[in-house]
Image (tube, rainbow, N blue to C red; front, side, top):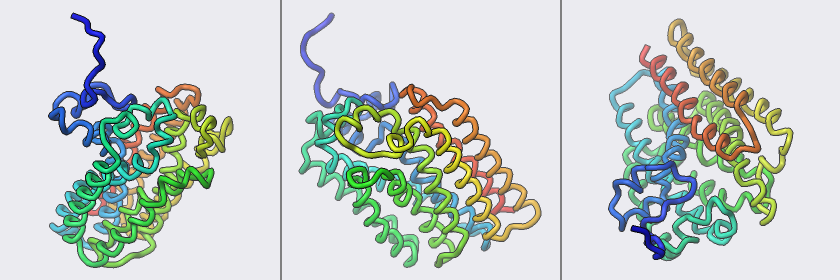
Length: 318
């Protein structure tokens, strides 16, 4: 039986969420707007925030001695990634609510669509941040200092597209901070290896988020929002080669700085080679004129990052 009545707000999916995602299928209807605000229906961002953390743990295991505590660091980073990505996305939607209302892909987000009020979003952001702080406090003083310092980057990122053509760099600065934090949680300090991995992650972020940004270039041009996708234009593929190559090269330097030998070095380099192969696969299939292809390639970067994390963990155990 058909009806002309509009769908209740809590049942409206966000347009770029995966079809049949768990939030739309299983979450209680009252929780759905809040979970959508945290991007729980689009978990790829949580993966991309988490994976540099696991890179940092793997490098620390290679440079030091694997510890049982590393299991908790890995779990804490996963929980923290869920909470802080949720808080960051909530902050992003608060600051971008007027822009999101003008872009077809983002108009269905909870704030511009009226599912959540700004006041409610602020309270939800605070709750997620406090839960993340509780987890951060278990990781040691060095990690706590780095975690608090990262908030400045998180606060600045949503405004970057208003004043620079390189907002993807600001996203990279925020999203890859976990490589430093996780290393510090294990080692209690910083060193060249995590700093090089952090730089590699920033280049990787410019790579994958430029692909992602090509979904919105027409709308962004109309409302004056800047991005590397608009900046690179028809030369995007060449720039992707530059940043992908830089990410691979910096990862090699990060591994060498951690000092593995023998089988551990071989495993780490195999992981980087697999990562490089995945980036080449993305370049081969990249089509800036197809939003569907751009979204599929963007989401595939979870697998690219897991290749590095898995092989670094194996190298650390060796």
